[in-house]
Image (cartoon, rainbow, N blue to C red; front, top):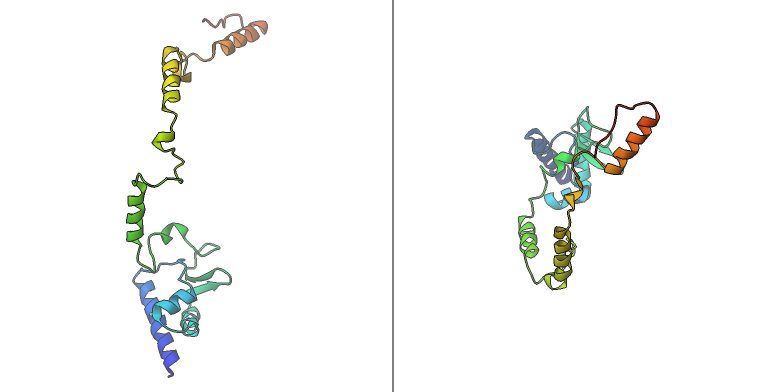
Amino acid sequence: MSIISGQSAKIAADIRAKIEAGEWYPTMKLPTQQELAAYYQVNRSTVIAALDRLKARGIIVSIQGKGSFVSNDSSNEEGVVWKELAKWSFYPKNKALVQHLNEWENDATLIQLSKGVLAHELQPKNAIKEALTAMAAQNVGFGYGDGRGDERLRQALSVYLQERGFKHLLIRS
């Protein structure tokens, strides 16, 4: 047995173990050949040989242009369960980046372009205050009215129905 076939057998066994342990689940997309080669520190051809071993046993399937997936007879057309991809990962999560993003989110020296929020000094506070004061002075009703519906529509319906013989349907104000 050559070194390459020995390495591909070990890689195939490791991938199979991940599948059997549930770390890689049915219909899950496997990492790319390049990613697997980097992870196992081998040439891509060694990874291809390992994947071919698994394909021959029906453990994985490959879809041209999409990648390799853990085999499942009831898999969908794409062979991917997108919801589950976030749960399992070949690589560890980047918690440090998330922590930095959370810190930057609260940094007052940074402009938060993603939120579309104006800086405090650019906010038209006086104009907003005047508009709110003017609204508070009016009987706005917040668009809900008295609960009986729009007065003009009620009157128009009353006239329409009366013209068609429904005299007993008088709509009161």
